[in-house]
Image (tube, rainbow, N blue to C red):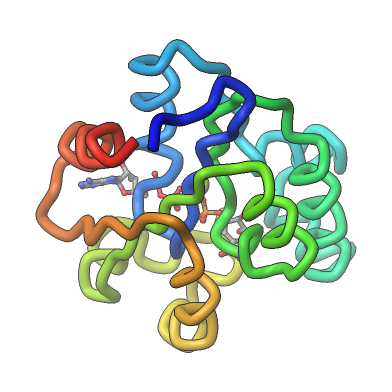
Length: 162
Ligand SMILES: Nc1ncnc2c1ncn2[C@@H]1O[C@H](COP(=O)(O)OP(=O)(O)O)[C@@H](O)[C@H]1O
Ligand SMILES: O=C(O)C1=C[C@@H](OP(=O)(O)O)[C@@H](O)[C@H](O)C1
Ligand SMILES: [Mg+2]
């Protein structure tokens, strides 16, 4: 089904799946506004994500993330953080207003890409988080298995599905 003009195109998936790399390609090709949820959170918090986690806790980060999902403008391409679609409020909102694409990456490929990135406070718990989140990610409208694909190939696959 074609993407409606007010419909958001939202990328979800684990850290390192390539959401932040693929989203700008999709925004450019579709001529839509790009909204990076992590950037919105950093702006609202006035500090980097690692400091929000360290100084205010994950609960504060999730509250800011939920607010950023609620504030998504219609018709944007949304580069979500890996947990945004796993929050019940965020998921309900996204499933009602967006086409949600799950970029699925293996643990090996994600580790090659990001390792234990200090800017991603939860990267050390990657495998346990993925196991817990997988049933939630599977509610997405489309899944793309991204191992071995270039960002351009992933973006093309998403566009072909729309
Ligand atoms: N398809 C890809 N192939 C190889 N490396 C990639 C690909 N997509 C992203 N990367 C790299 O992996 C790292 C994490 O990508 P990023 O887009 O930040 O992931 P996410 O936003 O899902 O956490 C970056 O260094 C990026 O350049
Ligand atoms: O998976 C998560 O819970 C998180 C993923 C990160 O974004 P990326 O998925 O872009 O790395 C960022 O939102 C934060 O560190 C929490
Ligand atoms: Mg990202």
